[in-house]
Length: 200
Image (cartoon, rainbow, N blue to C red):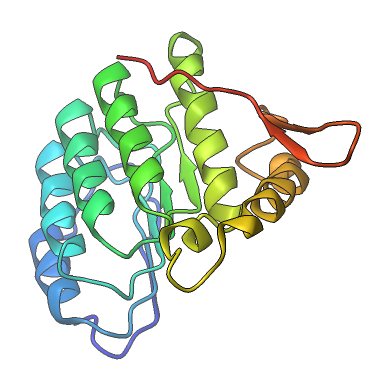
Protein backbone atom coordinates (compact mmCIF):
# COMPACT_ATOMS: atom_id res chain seq x y z
CA UNK A 1 0.00 0.00 0.00
CA UNK A 2 1.04 3.58 -0.56
CA UNK A 3 -0.20 4.98 2.71
CA UNK A 4 2.69 6.42 4.69
CA UNK A 5 5.06 6.88 1.76
CA UNK A 6 6.00 10.29 0.43
CA UNK A 7 7.61 9.05 -2.77
CA UNK A 8 6.90 6.08 -4.97
CA UNK A 9 9.44 5.23 -7.62
CA UNK A 10 8.79 2.36 -9.99
CA UNK A 11 12.01 1.15 -11.68
CA UNK A 12 12.05 1.27 -15.47
CA UNK A 13 10.82 -2.10 -16.65
CA UNK A 14 10.29 -1.36 -20.35
CA UNK A 15 7.12 -3.23 -19.70
CA UNK A 16 4.76 -3.14 -16.78
CA UNK A 17 3.74 -5.63 -14.14
CA UNK A 18 2.25 -3.06 -11.79
CA UNK A 19 -1.43 -2.79 -10.90
CA UNK A 20 -2.30 0.78 -11.81
CA UNK A 21 -5.86 0.41 -10.52
CA UNK A 22 -4.56 -0.27 -7.01
CA UNK A 23 -2.30 2.79 -7.14
CA UNK A 24 -5.14 4.95 -8.46
CA UNK A 25 -7.50 3.79 -5.71
CA UNK A 26 -4.88 4.50 -3.07
CA UNK A 27 -4.32 8.00 -4.49
CA UNK A 28 -7.94 8.92 -3.81
CA UNK A 29 -7.40 8.54 -0.05
CA UNK A 30 -3.67 9.06 0.36
CA UNK A 31 -2.75 12.33 2.06
CA UNK A 32 1.03 11.81 2.24
CA UNK A 33 2.22 10.75 -1.21
CA UNK A 34 3.83 13.73 -2.95
CA UNK A 35 5.73 12.12 -5.83
CA UNK A 36 4.66 9.32 -8.17
CA UNK A 37 7.11 8.27 -10.89
CA UNK A 38 6.15 5.61 -13.41
CA UNK A 39 8.24 6.29 -16.54
CA UNK A 40 8.76 3.68 -19.25
CA UNK A 41 6.20 1.18 -17.99
CA UNK A 42 4.07 0.86 -21.17
CA UNK A 43 1.14 2.59 -19.53
CA UNK A 44 -1.70 3.51 -21.88
CA UNK A 45 -4.82 5.64 -22.10
CA UNK A 46 -6.80 3.49 -19.69
CA UNK A 47 -4.09 3.77 -17.05
CA UNK A 48 -3.92 7.53 -17.53
CA UNK A 49 -7.70 7.75 -17.17
CA UNK A 50 -7.46 5.94 -13.82
CA UNK A 51 -4.89 8.46 -12.64
CA UNK A 52 -7.11 11.30 -13.88
CA UNK A 53 -9.99 10.11 -11.72
CA UNK A 54 -7.66 9.84 -8.74
CA UNK A 55 -6.23 13.33 -9.32
CA UNK A 56 -9.70 14.84 -9.15
CA UNK A 57 -9.87 13.65 -5.53
CA UNK A 58 -6.23 14.08 -4.51
CA UNK A 59 -4.79 17.46 -3.51
CA UNK A 60 -1.41 16.41 -2.07
CA UNK A 61 0.38 14.85 -5.07
CA UNK A 62 2.98 17.36 -6.27
CA UNK A 63 4.73 15.42 -9.05
CA UNK A 64 3.31 12.91 -11.53
CA UNK A 65 5.94 11.45 -13.86
CA UNK A 66 4.52 9.37 -16.73
CA UNK A 67 7.28 9.95 -19.28
CA UNK A 68 7.91 7.61 -22.21
CA UNK A 69 4.85 5.44 -21.87
CA UNK A 70 2.16 4.79 -24.50
CA UNK A 71 -0.32 7.46 -23.43
CA UNK A 72 -2.10 8.98 -26.41
CA UNK A 73 -4.61 11.77 -26.94
CA UNK A 74 -7.47 10.33 -24.88
CA UNK A 75 -5.31 9.61 -21.85
CA UNK A 76 -3.56 12.98 -21.88
CA UNK A 77 -6.87 14.81 -22.35
CA UNK A 78 -8.26 12.98 -19.30
CA UNK A 79 -5.21 14.02 -17.25
CA UNK A 80 -5.46 17.60 -18.51
CA UNK A 81 -9.15 17.83 -17.61
CA UNK A 82 -8.41 16.53 -14.12
CA UNK A 83 -5.53 19.01 -13.73
CA UNK A 84 -7.84 21.86 -14.77
CA UNK A 85 -10.08 21.37 -11.74
CA UNK A 86 -7.51 19.99 -9.29
CA UNK A 87 -5.08 21.83 -7.01
CA UNK A 88 -2.35 19.41 -7.98
CA UNK A 89 -0.02 18.13 -9.16
CA UNK A 90 2.32 21.07 -9.61
CA UNK A 91 4.44 19.05 -12.05
CA UNK A 92 3.34 16.64 -14.78
CA UNK A 93 5.95 14.92 -16.92
CA UNK A 94 4.44 13.59 -20.16
CA UNK A 95 7.34 13.93 -22.61
CA UNK A 96 7.87 10.87 -24.80
CA UNK A 97 4.22 9.85 -25.05
CA UNK A 98 2.68 9.67 -28.55
CA UNK A 99 0.00 12.35 -28.20
CA UNK A 100 -0.75 15.13 -30.64
CA UNK A 101 -2.47 18.47 -31.13
CA UNK A 102 -5.85 17.73 -29.40
CA UNK A 103 -4.06 16.65 -26.21
CA UNK A 104 -1.64 19.58 -26.42
CA UNK A 105 -4.56 22.02 -26.60
CA UNK A 106 -6.10 20.35 -23.54
CA UNK A 107 -2.80 20.76 -21.67
CA UNK A 108 -2.70 24.43 -22.68
CA UNK A 109 -6.17 24.93 -21.21
CA UNK A 110 -5.14 23.14 -18.01
CA UNK A 111 -2.01 25.22 -17.42
CA UNK A 112 -3.95 28.40 -18.26
CA UNK A 113 -6.65 27.70 -15.67
CA UNK A 114 -4.72 25.97 -12.90
CA UNK A 115 -2.10 28.31 -11.39
CA UNK A 116 -0.77 25.44 -9.25
CA UNK A 117 0.53 23.74 -12.42
CA UNK A 118 4.04 25.16 -12.71
CA UNK A 119 5.92 22.52 -14.69
CA UNK A 120 4.31 20.68 -17.59
CA UNK A 121 6.49 18.81 -20.04
CA UNK A 122 4.90 18.79 -23.51
CA UNK A 123 5.20 16.28 -26.34
CA UNK A 124 8.20 18.03 -27.89
CA UNK A 125 6.82 17.71 -31.42
CA UNK A 126 7.96 20.39 -33.85
CA UNK A 127 4.51 20.52 -35.47
CA UNK A 128 2.97 21.47 -32.10
CA UNK A 129 5.62 24.06 -31.23
CA UNK A 130 3.16 26.98 -31.45
CA UNK A 131 0.97 25.36 -28.78
CA UNK A 132 3.95 24.22 -26.71
CA UNK A 133 5.34 27.75 -26.73
CA UNK A 134 2.08 29.01 -25.25
CA UNK A 135 2.16 26.22 -22.65
CA UNK A 136 5.63 27.37 -21.58
CA UNK A 137 4.45 30.97 -21.40
CA UNK A 138 1.49 30.03 -19.18
CA UNK A 139 3.83 27.99 -16.97
CA UNK A 140 6.06 31.02 -16.56
CA UNK A 141 3.05 33.10 -15.51
CA UNK A 142 2.15 30.48 -12.93
CA UNK A 143 5.72 30.50 -11.65
CA UNK A 144 5.64 34.29 -11.58
CA UNK A 145 2.55 34.44 -9.41
CA UNK A 146 -0.68 34.27 -11.45
CA UNK A 147 -2.39 33.40 -8.15
CA UNK A 148 -2.19 37.09 -7.21
CA UNK A 149 -4.50 37.99 -10.09
CA UNK A 150 -7.05 35.35 -9.19
CA UNK A 151 -7.27 36.70 -5.66
CA UNK A 152 -7.92 40.36 -6.47
CA UNK A 153 -9.97 40.76 -3.30
CA UNK A 154 -6.74 40.25 -1.31
CA UNK A 155 -4.06 41.52 -3.70
CA UNK A 156 -4.15 44.82 -5.68
CA UNK A 157 -3.98 44.59 -9.47
CA UNK A 158 -1.00 46.94 -9.27
CA UNK A 159 1.08 43.84 -8.51
CA UNK A 160 0.57 42.54 -12.07
CA UNK A 161 3.72 44.28 -13.44
CA UNK A 162 5.74 42.54 -10.72
CA UNK A 163 4.27 39.19 -11.75
CA UNK A 164 5.28 39.84 -15.37
CA UNK A 165 8.78 40.88 -14.33
CA UNK A 166 9.19 37.69 -12.31
CA UNK A 167 7.88 35.69 -15.25
CA UNK A 168 10.50 37.35 -17.45
CA UNK A 169 13.30 36.44 -15.04
CA UNK A 170 12.08 32.84 -14.90
CA UNK A 171 11.92 32.57 -18.67
CA UNK A 172 15.22 30.70 -18.76
CA UNK A 173 14.35 28.10 -16.13
CA UNK A 174 13.91 24.43 -16.90
CA UNK A 175 10.85 23.82 -19.01
CA UNK A 176 10.87 27.35 -20.40
CA UNK A 177 14.28 27.59 -22.10
CA UNK A 178 12.94 27.48 -25.63
CA UNK A 179 10.52 30.34 -24.91
CA UNK A 180 12.65 33.18 -23.63
CA UNK A 181 9.75 35.48 -22.70
CA UNK A 182 6.64 37.15 -23.98
CA UNK A 183 7.14 40.21 -21.82
CA UNK A 184 9.66 42.95 -22.42
CA UNK A 185 10.36 45.99 -20.23
CA UNK A 186 9.84 49.30 -22.01
CA UNK A 187 11.99 52.42 -21.64
CA UNK A 188 10.33 53.31 -18.35
CA UNK A 189 10.97 49.87 -16.90
CA UNK A 190 7.35 48.70 -17.02
CA UNK A 191 6.62 45.25 -18.40
CA UNK A 192 5.00 45.18 -21.79
CA UNK A 193 2.80 42.19 -22.48
CA UNK A 194 2.86 40.84 -26.01
CA UNK A 195 -0.56 39.64 -27.07
CA UNK A 196 -0.83 35.89 -27.52
CA UNK A 197 -3.56 34.49 -29.74
CA UNK A 198 -4.83 31.13 -28.55
CA UNK A 199 -5.03 28.57 -31.30
CA UNK A 200 -8.45 27.07 -32.14
